[in-house]
Amino acid sequence: MHKLRILSLLIFVLPALSIAPAGANAQSFFSFFWEGGSREVVSFDPRQAPGQIIVSFGDRRLYWIQRPGVAISYPIAVPREQSRWQGVTHVSDKRHNPSWTPTAEMRRENPRLPAYVPGGHPMNPLGVRALYLGSTMYRIHGTDAPSTIGTAASKGCIRMYNRDVLDLYPRVPVGTRVTVTWRRYRA
Image 1 (tube, rainbow, N blue to C red):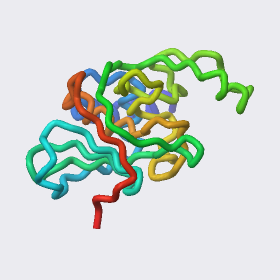
Image 2 (cartoon, helix red, strand yellow):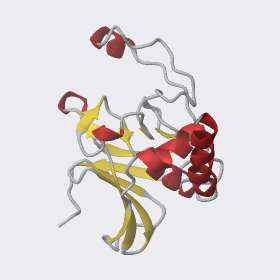
Image 3 (cartoon, rainbow, N blue to C red):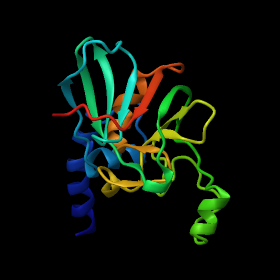
């Protein structure tokens, strides 16, 4: 019976490996199947320059401007009310499987938080990729809590489904302009 279960799992997993994103690890592989990922190509303001990111907290979407008038739109989790911000910054660093160290404020708020979570750990709140924003502590990153996407949940970061951040990550070089706004772009 045990051999039959393993064989059944292999029949399911092996074909799926061929469609997993390049460079995907075990965490991103399982995230690929179990998390959302509802990016879509949308019409967008043609005055916006290609290659930039616009984060709309009002829409709860991140837009990567693909070409004039066209963007790829990704669902996001936005900051909680007390952590809201806006402005223009840039991608200052990019990391595969980033490690996470909660701030002192986060640990005061939740003393059960670990002092450190290594990159690649399935309970790492930064998920599988992170784009660091300017000289701030804020990031655009994956998540270990996909149910938060579409809600106001973070301490200032922009959370994405791991599947979506894997799609965005190779499109965005260091130096990319990032505009964070409460303006709504969706009708």
